[in-house]
Image (cartoon, rainbow, N blue to C red; front, side, top):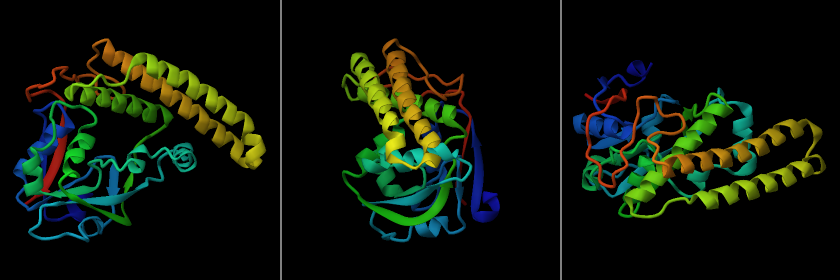
Length: 273
């Protein structure tokens, strides 16, 4: 559908590198424009997506990052959409973390930062834009430009959570830090589960009866997130090479300074003509 929505786009299929970050770097090298706009495969763009994303574009000034506004795709299960609304679980937004979903950067800034770390299988967008915001101003557009289908069901969402935590462990290792500790995650899981159990007991006293089932489900999801977080940390500490919803053939390098070697994960990218 995007070949008709964005007519001046050529589509490139690519299967030589092992991560989506490698694919993004490769797409950036093939792009010919001055601005690089990134978009994820689980999103649907509105017709004015690019104009909204670059509404505050500053020509000839690479010191800017442009972030679009995403809205949950209606296909996302209602319990997850309500979960985020009620429990304030948009951690990335709350902490100002930027994902590669609906974001644009000047090519000069991208090249100056050296692109994404290709060995990472998760968390590379947070790592890259964490470096970018230290030297660039962030422009956030508040009008919805795309819809994000981030989870087919609760199980899919929890597997993504596990992968993301595994990626955080990799980032911490790359920076020479200890990363999450198993015993701390274990206690967080126990205490968090107890807190959610207490909160669940008071739901009938605080909310109308038609909201009880879905609010109870939200508490269960929170507990399961803690379990999957613990699972990812344990898997990392035991030397695992994959976690969560990573493809079966995807493996991560455990070196702090991994070489960017070809892999098997197939991905695609688009870039301007």
